[in-house]
Image (cartoon, rainbow, N blue to C red; front, side, top):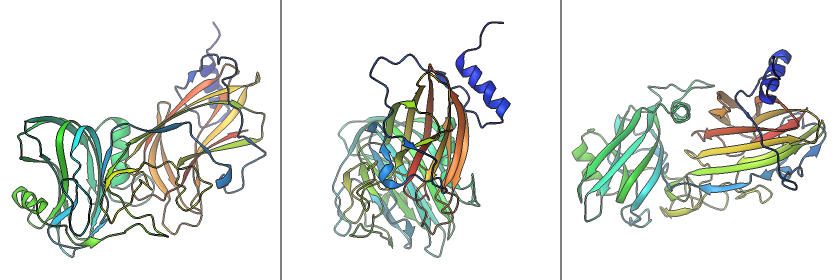
Length: 402
């Protein structure tokens, strides 16, 4: 029998040792002289919490990328009857903003809770503000908690939306639509009983002077939704930015993806290294800022994507050793140890060809993704995740040399 490739050896060792393996990670090509990065590792073991101190976190080598993202999350809680929650067509006397028609491609993320005391229908509309016809396409998923109840790990509408995108199995597959000038089409809708929440993410392409609206109606009729999009905002709980507040997102923000790659030399054990995956320096200057600025935000809403809800994160880690095989544990960690919420992260993460449910709390902030063997030649470990809603800001990607 011929010799096994390094990644097969790693998988076999992991199976024999009972480790959580990272399947289908590829051997890395030999690194040119001087390109390996081994700085930033801390000697010793992690703190007992599994959380890397803020001052030790490194920024991932990468940047915001991809098309802009249109967000509707302020008001998160809907109180009124009929009106729009977010739109990019015009300034509003009360909520501010300005016209910013979308062209080319864009992502969309929305999250709302109906606490109006009666059933409501939420509509996602698109209009053509241009002079000529628009041939566009869209795809995505949207769920309510009636369809995907939230009851802990691996549940809820936000988890379901992120899972659909990771799997490439969307509730609304790619759909083409022709929109004449000054006409409106409905991209999605959700029926919301009182107390219900909705989470949705879409990607659009072929846009030409497109305006988007999230609209609440009592009737559920498209005609009423179109009329409401041209009137005033619906009543709801606005969370504005302030000296001690992030503010919720309602606007168009630059970059719906964060792409990063790192080349690392794994040192002898014990050692650890933490990367900022979803952090902001707004209230902690020692943290790397992973957010995107607003191209247009309503005047009562966040000027940056503090939570990055709906954003795609793609990270490629290239791990090499210094001539000796190394064993490395990879974890997703929440730094929000003082959070009062029931969980701090609840979403799927793709590592290699395996999807792992990640659930962290203030009491259990660390979730192991895998443990793997790093041969001298090295391996590449790809990670992919969509930031789900209802999480607490402040995720870390932590590596440990064991």
